[in-house]
Image (tube, rainbow, N blue to C red; front, side, top):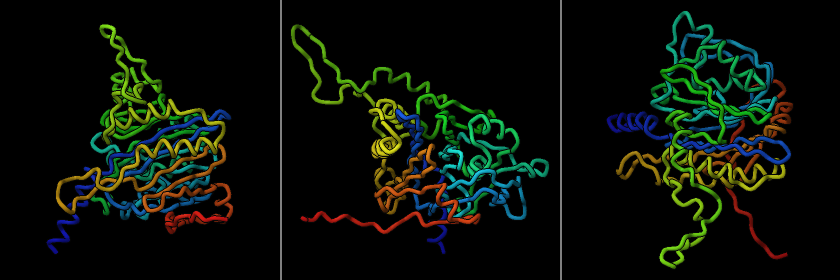
Length: 359
């Protein structure tokens, strides 16, 4: 029993100390398609599966609060994506209108309203906001207006022994993207002007921090002369010299902004998805690289899954830690197969390797 308590406490501490390394980018193709993509990091398996919620589904919020019902709605749009902790909540997904939402860890800065009897009927828990947004809206303007109609609260989640501290990346099919944050200062909606999103601190802080890296460029430096001595770089990559390479959120934000905005042009959505996954390979965290302590059985943050979304054709692409082959979920096709029923599909498939043979 004592050992079990220690393990459980370690899991609680892990939730607050680890799971903060998610990275998001946006790729825009030459034929006008917007592709939001991201990594999901955590210190343990969050048991994500593909959750499909059809148009017309009845949704009641405060699902983690026993004996209390919050805001109630009927889904205007069908949507699908990854869930977490085996609950009917989409933490990363797309709807029939091509609207994308992703939850990003925001511990320490996230602050929500307290649930009261007076706000309960309009209350949506922080981990459920994806269901509200994806089930209700088609554009960023609609999302911003819609946020005024509900109260986002922090509710106690038993499996993590606390609230879900998120901020949210939202992108619509027109290419507009915002980052939604609830802090002690209230609700703020930031326009995502640099095609990147990470974790703490707030989005505007990250924009200010980018000013420390104004010299970054994809072009190699030509060098300079000192007393007739030509000083040249020692190899490729001198344009990006000085770019931070660690796994902290500020460093990843700089790299994400640099890579997303210097990527070669993508002719179409197929090429854009391909480039998005390639860029996010640079943010993939192997087990062991980030640990909460130095003990032998330390929990380690790692990339649980990576996703990319074709907002034009409403296709959700992903790969997992256990299987690096890219899989796709065609939202419009799968909604027809669901026949109006909320459906969960196993996201993991058997890992395999393609044999190279002689014909």
